[in-house]
Structures are given as C-alpha cells and as structure tokens.
Image (tube, rainbow, N blue to C red; front, side, top):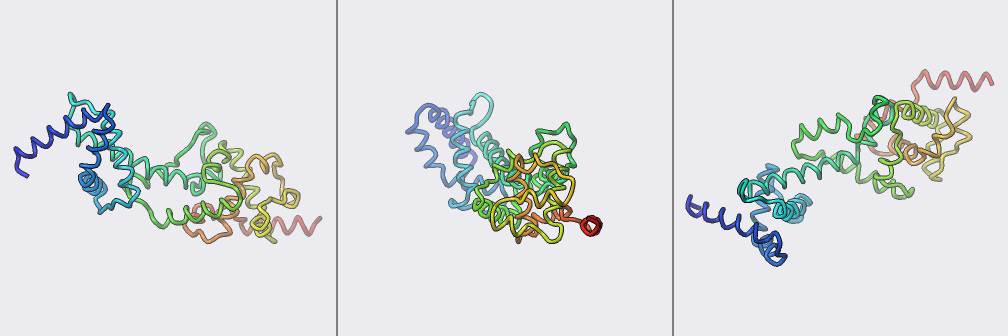
Length: 261
C-alpha cells in the first residue's frame, strides 16, 4: 500500500470509527470488515502468531469496540488508539491469570510476610515482576496447574475467587493459618482425611499445637486449598508453599510433646 492509499485508509477508518460510536449496525460492520486487521494487530502486539480461536483475539476484538466508544479524532488516529486499548486489555487478561494464582502461590500470602498495613494486598510483587518480564506472555506450565487446581477445588465447592475473599489479610492471621497447615502435616498427616471428606478435623488438629480455633472456620477454604496444593501434583505451585510443611524441628518437638503427655 503506497503512502497516499495508506493515508486515505487511515482517514476513512477514523471517520468510520466516529460514525460507529452511536450506530450499532455500522459498528458491527466496521468490526467485521476489520477482523483480519485486528488479528494481525494483536499478533504484532504480542510478537507471536494469534488465531481467531485464541482468547487473546476475543479480548482484542472487544477492545476495538471499546476503543470506538472512547475515540477522540481530535487527539489521534483511530488504530494507534485502538492498539493502546488492545494492549491494556491483554495486560488485564494476563494480570487476571496471574492474580488468580497470587492467593495460592505468593509466599507472603501463606506465611505472613506482608506488612500488617497491606491488608488490601491483591497482586504480589513476585507476580507483578513476572508480568513485567514476560511482557504480556503467559507461563503455560503454571497456567495449566492453576486450571487443574481450579477444577480440583470445584469438587469441594471452592473457587479461586472464593480464596481471594477468604484468604487471611493481616500478618498475624497469615501466620496463624500457616501454623494450622503445618499442624495438619505433622505425622501422621491429616491431609488424606481432609482430601477425602472435604472437612478439617478441628479437634485433632488443635491437639497438635497452640492454634487459634476461630481461624478454622473463617479460613476453612483457604486451609483446604493449601492442603490440596501440598498434597497434590502441583510442582510449580508447591514451590511457593513448600516451607509450610513442618520442619524436622517441628516434627521432633511434636513427637517429644506427644511422648511426654
């Protein structure tokens, strides 16, 4: 396409975008006509091939429609603006994938390594850094584990969004939940019983240490999720919570208390 043709197409698209803002039929026609363009633009943004069956294309397609609503022809051309919206929405997509894992994989989320003041802590620095380094990429291994874990959680009536709501927020509460998880895995482990029944044997766990009983019900889903990770086939997720298993010192101390009682 020569320069004159390119400029003409650019101006026509600017006009069509404006006309599509309040005309549903024109919007649908415009999006349909530019389907291939959107696909190519998405591939350029991600620096890899994208097909119409990919989630990324669906997100980009919707983003272009959103760009039509927010487009101001006085400020710039339509497609550079649309590319900006597409990039942001793709970033949101991958951020959501990562944040779904944050409650599960962030060391601080389980061990209380986040300051008390950060009670509204949503996305860990570790996950943010991964997003920055991957620059809109996805760690497929971790993503696959998260999806498999999400499916297993559903068997217990738990969703990943539930975990975001019921996860302990303060350092003190996180530390208390970590103590409960370690107690669950003291020998003989009670994890199998929890996995089988979907219930935490509170009395049995309480006998294993000085634990806060109120945390069991308040964070039941969270505790079950941690138990499933540590007991299941989730090597990537387990890397982040491996320290929650009781140490040799924990086990020796527990055995000494039990034998002395």
